[in-house]
Image 1 (spheres, rainbow, N blue to C red):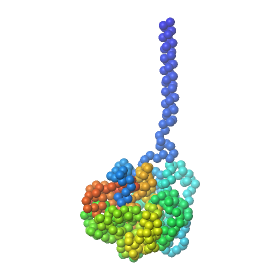
Image 2 (tube, rainbow, N blue to C red):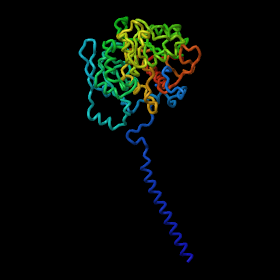
Image 3 (tube, rainbow, N blue to C red):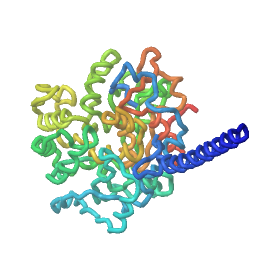
Image 4 (cartoon, rainbow, N blue to C red):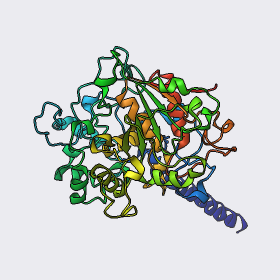
Amino acid sequence: MARMKRTVLGMLTVSFVVSVYLLRGNLEETLSWSLVPLSRFHGYIQGRNSSQDSEEPVDRNTSRNRPSHPEFSSATFLRPNPRIAPTLESQTPVAKTQRAPAENEVPSVSKATSKSDEESRTLKRGPTDPPFIGDTYTSEDIPPQTNCPDGIQGHVAETEFGGRFLKHIPVLQWAKHVSPEQHQRLSKYTGAHGWGGLDYATLVETLSVLNSSVNRQMFDDWKNRSDASLCIHCAVVGNGGILKYSKKGQEIDSHHYVFRTNGAITQGFEQDVGSRTTHYTFSTNTLMNSLNSYAGVGYRRPPHSEETRYVFLPDHDRDYLLMKAAATHTRVEQGRERNRDPTTLFGTDVSAEKLKMYHPDFIRYLRNRFLRSNTLKTSHKNIYRPSTGAVMLLAALHTCDQVSAYGFMTPDYMNYSDHYYDSSYHAVAFYSNHDLRLEMSLWQQLHRAGLIRLFMHQ
């Protein structure tokens, strides 16, 4: 009897062990199918994305002196994005545009180039961008203003930026760009990246004042100042503290064109930063913030001279309204600047011919292809854009033949105060709406590629 009990108990034990083994095998087989890496799923992209404007604070309490993303090397920052095909410009999707009326001084706007069915199918099989990215842009056939033998446009294809640089994207917008079709397309994008929130009637009414060919040319007076030069030389001047005691003023002023932005104070600092300003870039928001923040150190109004052009960065409807008021010498009709007299800002000799405005496609293109920050993956994605200084420098990169950059953030930025006109040391402030460390890395790469000449102490 005892032997029989031991035999039965042994058989039960063996059966239990076999059952557990079989059950474990089934579970492992099930788990091996369920634990597929996320990167295998369509649409999932691992974080490989990697933009100097303390005049535009957003979320100051939570973001000051804190990077908007982890620190990476510049190579990681600017690795070509797999969602942006490194192809020639002719292969880039181009949004439909209407052809401009035939005028001798006005180049026509190119028609859309249609994709083949096979190319479209190929694109659909790959990862897709979120809708707010919008990596398609209008295109224009704009003849070059010079035949510079060693210009940026001819050299960029040989660099790492060749696959993302679009030669025919319009840098500036003007009256000829406005149509119901373009309004419908660009209304998908908000802020500086499109016409979202801007009704068609207001857009037509405001942009209609930019109706001359000089409004769509960055260098509308080049024929009068070329001095037999084959190349357009530009100095792009930021407000960084690295310029203090630099004695670069004479060198800066020797360029054909001098770009400045926001709190561009020159009086008393001419030896270091120069005195000329041919192109002043700003948004209405950054301009008003500069007037409030830097009045104590001498900033009373934007630079003003016969050669100065005012380049609006259209962040809100405020910019369109102020631009129209300036062009027509009338007070601002509505909004935060309602009843403001623009001549107090730009002088009594301001005219429509001295005004320009960046195209939202251009700003979105800069964000997508040059300054695609990890901020776009966060809750701050809707307020993120390249800083005003970054837009200015990259606009020069797309319009000048040779670019020298001064006063922009460099890896040793902690050695200098935020601005060259600071009376005491102020650390650089970081905010959620810009990615200054990414911009700093971009300037280094453009310098190494020979596309800009960046002023550095190191």
